[in-house]
Image 1 (cartoon, one colour):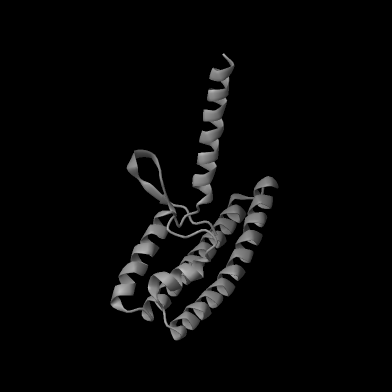
Image 2: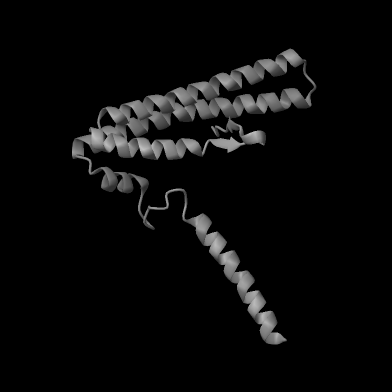
Length: 156
């Protein structure tokens, strides 16, 4: 009886550890442990020093632009929550929703600009690889809803 209980406990612990290990691998399953994303991109695309510097400048510019939009989004979401909890008028609440949607659209535009900038420095073969990666990443922003439809989930 003790052996059966130990085997069952072992199976449960093993399955939990395997599930956690799968989650810890992250989104890029081809990324080796301890490697930075930039190192993976450098290895995958075999970029020149000039291209690496351009990519880094694109990344820094994008992060700066997006951070200001994220800060504004957080403020607007807090204001919306306050307005909902204080039972403000419907027009005031809808105004906050419109402003939030505008900011989400601006963030999406910045992402598109960054993708276009990166593509501009790549040759045709590398563009194919980059496009494959960006399509895979963009699928993460969609969630299946009822009846096979999808809706955009943009976490800003």
